[in-house]
Amino acid sequence: MAKSDAWNLLGLQDDKNTQFILEELIQIGLKILNASQGSLLVAEPDKKNLRFAMVASRTGLANFQRLFGQLVGKTVPIGEGITGMAALTHDIQTSTRASAGEKFYHVRGDGSPNAVLAAPMLIGEHLIGVITAVRFDRGKPFSTEECQTYGMFANIAAVVVDQQQRLATLAHAPMAAAMGSSERKECDLVRDVLSLVRAKPEKIDAVHEIFNAVARL
Image 1: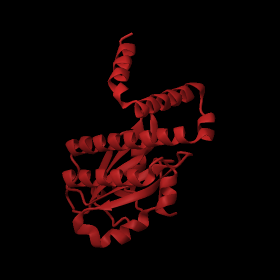
Image 2: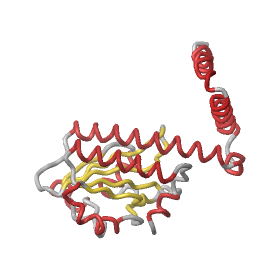
Image 3: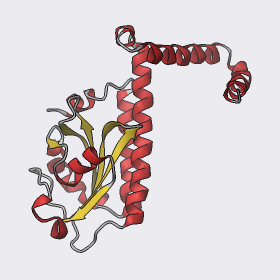
Image 4: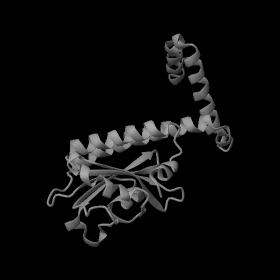
């Protein structure tokens, strides 16, 4: 499966820019964690597998990017290995090859990392996917603090995807028609507010005040 096919599972409105933002987000996370490589896996609709949509490597591994790029399109069963367990439990997971033993799930072309960190991308209880960070150095597990930090990156990635999915829903009437009543009303409200603000940008402050007043009711 090609990268574009894996990304199609997300149904994004602004596909190219969203890919760029998410890749940059993972690269920043890798730099902060001093990790070697990161990836983004998308949850398939049946929630049985995660599918690789992106692989990003630090500068020192640039020569291996083509090799690692072969991971795109491959799958990891939800519930298997560190990454699959993050998807199943909705919690951040990490382990090293030494401590995980046979539970350390191997995907052909992954470079055999020695430590893996996987953080689920969630909107409420809805699983969008998982972002991972790996180290190839032996004896360097991810700390609790590093897990928490990467978890925040996963939260940001989830919000970015969710916003683009909502915009895609608004842009496609047939998709909107298939939604429930409350979801359709929510999308209609967002569309109306966006239309008003774009047509009359000077009304932004007034709209903001109205929302604040309603929230206080």
